[in-house]
Image (cartoon, rainbow, N blue to C red; front, side):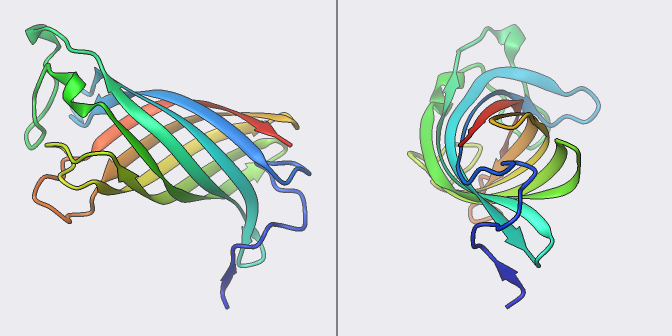
Amino acid sequence: MLSSALPAAAANVMFGDNENQLLISAGQSIRNDIKDPKTENLYIASLSYGIPTHYFNFLQGRFNFEVGAFRGKNGSDNDRVGSPGYPKTTDMKQYNLGYAGFSQDIAVIYFGGFYTSLGLGAYMKTKATNRIGTAFTFGEKAALGYNFGPVAVEAYIRHFSNAGLSEQNSGQNFYGAALAYNF
């Protein structure tokens, strides 16, 4: 077998010598217009429980169970954000929803307490929207973090989409920060 999702025996850069992690994160939505990216009044908050993992006997990782929510705040016509292919709206409350799922993060580059990670997960949302037309969705994440021992901090970017399972799949992007407690 090429990979193993069993807890790591040696210290993991995201956990140190600990075997459990609680991670709280918060962020804001950004629409993907490469020439002029804009934030919008849509926010994400989540709580994750993670355990350390190893893959291919040398890649350090983290397996997570996550629950979270998107919450929108309606804006004015001047707050309308979007680009071709993205629904433009000021009604951000239509995206209020909860979600839960599992993900795997892999530490790609790490030295000292610093690390970069890439993650992939599968989630169920409480409803479909005009941006992601299914309740089932995938999530990708890239993060830069530092582990202080019992506490770690991360800055991240995230993308949610349904991988083309429906015609409505403009996705949802967030940037934010996370604080982890390792125990």
